[in-house]
Amino acid sequence: MDAYLTTPHGALFAGDCLKLMAVMKPQIFDCIFADPPFNLGKDYGNGFNDQVGQAEYLDWCQHWINEGARLLKPGGAFFIYALPELAVKFAHFMSERLTFRHWIALTMKGTYSRGRKLYPAHYALLYFTRGEPKTFNRLRVPVPTCRHCGKEIKDYGGHRDKLNPRGLNLTDFWEDTSPNRHKRYKVRPGVNELKLMIPERAILISTDPGDFILDPFGGGGSTYQAAEFNHRRWIGIELYDCAHIRMRLEENLFFGVGQPPTFNVNDLFLTNEDYKDHLLQRVTG
Ligand SMILES: C[S@@+](CC[C@H](N)C(=O)[O-])C[C@H]1O[C@@H](n2cnc3c(N)ncnc32)[C@H](O)[C@@H]1O
Image 1: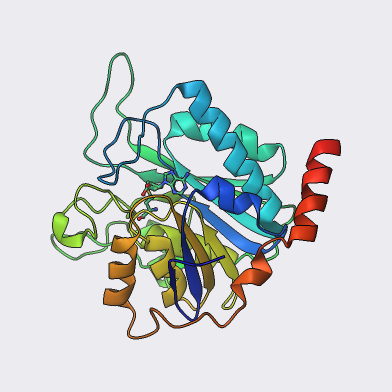
Image 2: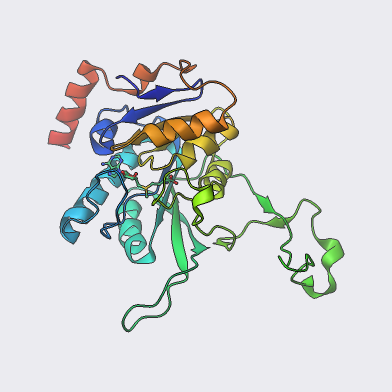
């Protein structure tokens, strides 16, 4: 398999994630982070058609979710970022093979209400594991302060002095993760890359340094940057324009883009013999 780009920690493949995932060995990843297209007719600026029939879209999603579950190590974590309307369906697919951990709600700003509905104010980050989690790191966040006056927002019922000096426990409600809307912070104009913090937290919660992460929908490459910054190994896939991911990594990594990975990429893929067995298992099982 020829990668589009490599670093000592990772490899990015230019291609269709479903095709590539189908030829990977089972149980190789410690964490999968997926931020798929939502089938809303969005222009990704790269030729991707983000509007097919809903049944076709959900069928496709079920396929890559099943492949993802196959690729997870026992105890590995699978995160999917989605609109609540899609997340309920994805959760159903995931729960056929994986164990539910959390529906993390992330505040969404700058939206508007449509029709006879409430004002949408959150995205979902689904967090499932393959059985009991093999890694669960408790994260802490800074005590929230007012962005105008700098003072702390809550008084903690007079028990402020009892708070852990390293900050508050991260909850399943993230209020600091709105998308990068200003073009100054974007890698590719017209695309809402996730804030780095979102894949980064998922990675930090569920993996240790050296662990292996897959993000099958590269986009602007935030997961790969988060993996690099935190000394995790990674595999990326993007069907359309990979050039902006290269640019992002070149801008943010001091060295390493273009160097060979410190692992054998081919070890991740099924051999011809494995592949025949794998097909047979699918047909019979
Ligand atoms: C929502 S974006 C991901 C953004 C990314 N999480 C970030 O923060 O930069 C989804 C990406 O998936 C890509 N994509 C769509 N279908 C794909 C497929 N079958 N295989 C791989 N990538 C695909 C699109 O081109 C788009 O760039």
